[in-house]
Image (cartoon, one colour):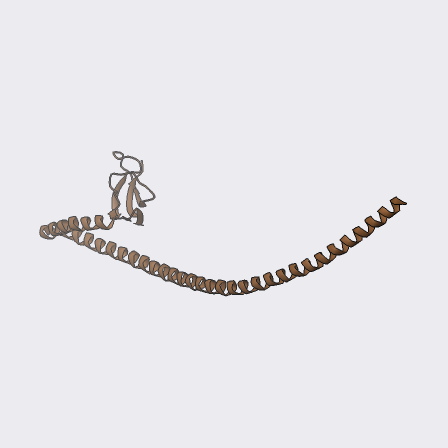
Amino acid sequence: MMKISIDRELKEYYKKKTLEYDENVNELGGSIISIFEDLKNIQKKSVMQGVMKDEQVQSIYRQKLADLESKEIKDNNEIKELKKTEKLFLKNIIRILDELERLKEYGDTSGNEKLSKTLERNFKAIKKYMLELELLEIPTVGLLFNENYHDCVDIKNDSEKDDFEVLEVLRKGYVYKGKVIRAAEVIINRI
């Protein structure tokens, strides 16, 4: 009998403790739920404030990005215009040099030594300015033909010269900052 009584007492004790535990859990659960609700509310408020701040930051960021893109487009357009102007400027300088070359040839062939000497001095000064601009005349006569710098417009046969040697220049060529602006038109030797 003692065993039954102990079992019953254990069951009752267990039942009592389970009820106390359940009550404590319910009470604690309510407190935990309340705490979670408070945390959710706090989180919602901070998220809303953060979203507003994020939206403000994103708005400022988008505006700065749009400003930078606009400036980049403007700068790219200015660079394109400057390159066009530079190219036109170089072409016009080369045309002026061509005209001066023709004038010098006229001075040489007409026997006008004064004109020839004046143009000779002018060409020395012009070459100095060209060097400062990095606009250089392409070397030609006596050198071997180079398709990167020369356009062959005619071929002659001279057994005393090397094969592919440039014999004459019909129109000078120019390089600007290492880039060919106009290839020299030349006559080369073929044996």
